[in-house]
Amino acid sequence: MATTKQLLNARYGKDTGIGDDKEANEQVKALLARRSIRSFKDKNIPDALIEVLLACAQSAPTKSNLQQYSIVLVRDQNIRQKLAPWCPRTNNLEDKPLLIVFCADIRRNQRVGEFRKIQNVNNNLDTFLNATVDAALALGYFITAAEASGLGAAPLSSLRDNIHAVSTILGLPPGVFPVAGVMAGWPMNNGYINQRLPQSVVIHQNQYDDSNLEKEIKEYDQTRHAIFPIAEERQTRTDLWGIAEFYNWSEHISRQLGKPERPEFKAFLKSHGFDLG
Ligand SMILES: Cc1cc2nc3c(=O)[nH]c(=O)nc-3n(C[C@H](O)[C@H](O)[C@H](O)COP(=O)(O)O)c2cc1C
Image (cartoon, rainbow, N blue to C red):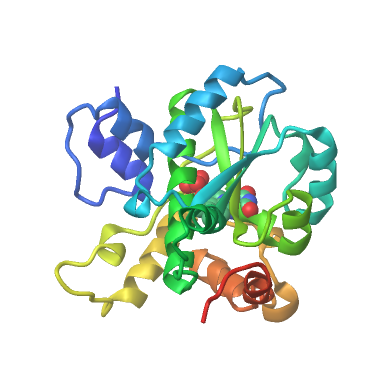
């Protein structure tokens, strides 16, 4: 038995005054208690299950039913071995029971236009965004379905760390790029619930208002710290910013975003069939 209040308290790391004492329905419970899983048992996932999960991914909403994404199942050990060195931040990529790449794909509808003899004139930033959102929603639905089936999963943007090499290895033609991968399998551990920002920070009533941001983020840092203090050796980019006395979420994400991430991405897209203007 898990009440909505219990689940919300776990999600936010404290009692935020929302939720009630009724038992949450199964689907809501699964969403509120979800967590990424990165270690898996060496146990097969039946093909029939994978097919159903992929159908769930395809059931996600998609802009105008344009379905501007493709999904690459990477099963061939040879291809996995080639990919792994290009994704060094993900340990043992080649051994994940399931490795799937969700791609934005504007190529398919360009080809459809060709045989319909109607030129597709929408290779632009809006289509790029729509295709990326389509791929991300499909990924989200896949993960939700996988978790509901007892699997554990985690998305992988590390596949974009060396996007040229990864796209070549996966044979992605112009107009198709990897948004993120998903690794999945039968979970080796229970993982943990990663506390989210309070609703007062993320949800705005009628108009955007972040006037209380600093205070609320500092409270969030404290809430997380009380549950998962970050050990000194896990502080990142100490070469640039030294050892922080109180290392917390806001410090961590600021350090991450304080260095350019994947600066070559735009040039890659431009050289790979995307006209971003
Ligand atoms: C687009 C995207 C890319 C991600 N890339 C990675 C990744 O490369 N490696 C990884 O371990 N986790 C990755 N994650 C998982 C996040 O780290 C994780 O969702 C976040 O820390 C919150 O934890 P939770 O999912 O357990 O709630 C990614 C998640 C998203 C949505």
